[in-house]
Image (cartoon, rainbow, N blue to C red; front, side, top):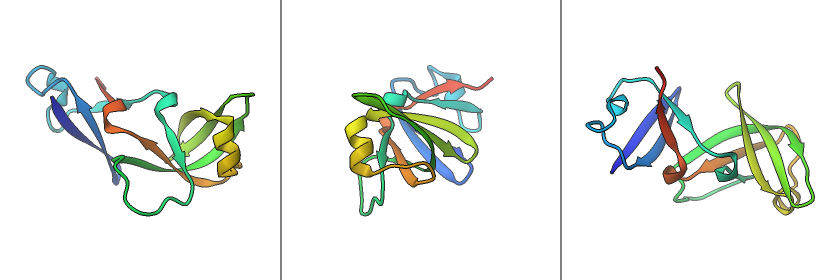
Length: 118
């Protein structure tokens, strides 16, 4: 098992993996990789303060909200890259999310997948 940190600009993301650099050579230092995660694993926080166990915190801007009866999708801008979060519509209402809001997207390290970028 490995705990891998990946630098994306000024941000560092963490992933816990079953692979090691010996079993997956793309995990070696300096090798380009892609970070992947499901939209259902992206939680949202508004005005979050204090410490939290989730290591992956992305400062994002809400681009669009597609409301459903039970679930909604929130399109997010992270440094020019589009991300999506699928959360309950109740959560959207409780957070009072609207387009243009600055929020944090949160992903647990064990929900991150690292893939070879080459």
